[in-house]
Image (spheres, rainbow, N blue to C red):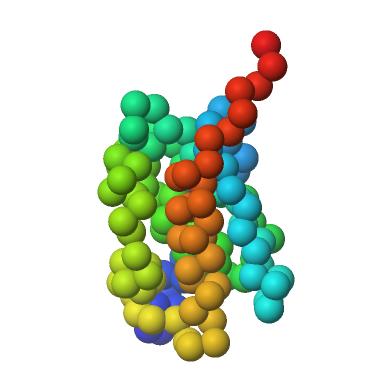
Length: 126
């Protein structure tokens, strides 16, 4: 089994941080209309640092694995550092490049994270 396949299967079968984040103050939804993947990234940012990161998804194994790896990585990172994560990091973390037709599955969580980093959730009513 290739490293790529083993990492994707591990994170798909046992995804890290796959749960809603009720205390999120940043959130974004992403979708890939070509294959039907949908992902939501939720963050709790405190003093410029990502204190918590979680995701929910109705997506393929590759997209779920990418979201799992990404939310693991960004916890504890400064927002600016998380915003600098790129597709090359994702490929390395997955153990190799996804097949050309599946690249968007791997980058959807990354694009959604970037959107969430720049979206401040409205304060909830008291």
